[in-house]
Length: 203
Image (cartoon, rainbow, N blue to C red; front, side):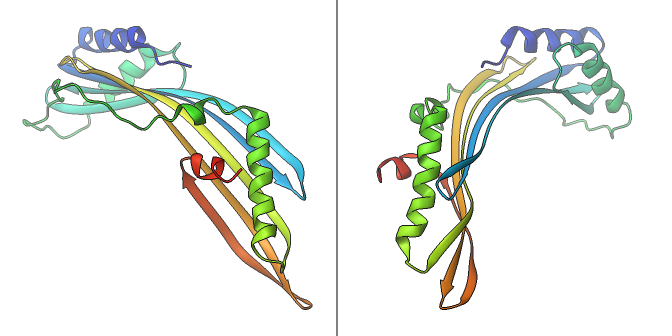
């Protein structure tokens, strides 16, 4: 799972050759693993891999933008961006950013990146069990789910900007029903997001 620097540079080159005075590519590749459990049993496991890219151009002081999820159609994206720019208002101050000091985006957790399906199932079961353990009145749960995301982002432009970074994200949510005597009550949805180490430390 990686972005493609050469593809991004070729997209910029195509745009400049077709009349753009500036061009910038934003490319994102990401994968997701999510697990849903109910009553101690796995209800669903979902994995997905998505990718996409967008092209921003400046032509005659006018901005244009187009995007796609298909890397086999760069010509269409370039043409669409340039065509859209023809209908935009002209801005004499419109510019693309130039390179700055080296920067690091620290939003990547290798633990989340290494999560396997069996680990995700274990975390989802732990979330459900934690709901039962928190209050004896909780008798049922619904939609106990955990999700793990990993992505890579690439930004390249005709001014010399060339930066990329990796990122991770995880979330968990559960809906529980509590019974006080014979009267059931939904306890709403409890959500948590951030570092999976919060869950990991409670094993």
